[in-house]
Image (cartoon, rainbow over the protein chains, first blue to last red):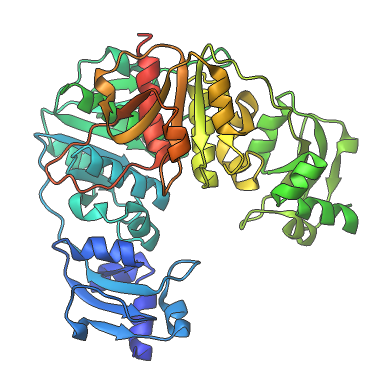
Length: 244
Length: 244
């Protein structure tokens, strides 16, 4: 059972404003919920349209109708379960490792992909402008496939965060940057990834200490740009390969 | 003006079956259409909801109502223009360069991203199983941002195509493969990318001569896998960096 008020609350969590107010977010589907349950995240409640086996107290699980699920779900194709979790606290960023900085990434799929990528390459911290898409956006939660629990995202004044990091090299990709193949990367630094349409903003560009570029091949040279998640994959891989 | 029969034809092009039958496909939005017009693709017609400036004979452009555009469009957010182009002929594959092989990639966004990536890195040929998502799928056309015209996709019996290539190394990513950082890559070979859920099929795996892996970092090591487009970015970059 789910009350009208609960449905109303859950629907409100589709919006950032209410996620922030309630410090709650939703996750859908057995796989994603299962991954989040393995983490330190605190579960509020699970709603299912059929009996499912989750390793939680039965008082935390309610059966609901498909109609009610449809009202609560943020996905176009409804799942058979939806969970409400408490948002994690932002941790302090450790600038003695590689930190990824996101300058207004707007696409939930891109953010989700970048989080999975950071998780794969053992990058723990991502710092973001306040305008960057929210990690608790339902589409981001789905796209991260659970890896959001292993990466710490901190939102705020990106300029100030980078300035506070002091003495750390700040890398940014630009068309006129130096080839990534010619860099002497170290295991420390901030890698800035820019907005999908506008790239890195002027304010953040002024803080970049090393402009880098992914070489473009082929005779035609007409490709405008790589998608930001692909560029992040290539650049982060270059940082990690120095350990080999 | 657009007739009911034209709308019917254009709507039918949302489906692979009819694109194949008519050898036509649709592209939407000023940017994408503009890119395709610069290529050798043959334009059939452009439909716009407002006067737009394309460098084509005015007889090739028709003004249509927003309602008619809505009927023709394959996108959820309709654009102000839609063009119908003739499909390009598949070219012969040149195995003296790097060729990407797609073993049942199903997601249009992933295929679009891989095409952009190949274009960036100067890879001209992609060979695909017949089950791989169609390059002329409207979502793929949008995701490639025009780079589909510079990459040749050949669909068919992937096993046979790889066998025909003879003497060429065949690379595939597997969890138990050898680290990409320890490879002596050459400027020749087939790079196989597998299906999003199931990876590389057994039949194609038996043709792989070099199993490779993207090292995973971090102490937790819980990330299941990288998205196929990210994995492709990292692997293709490793092949191209040997030229530097």
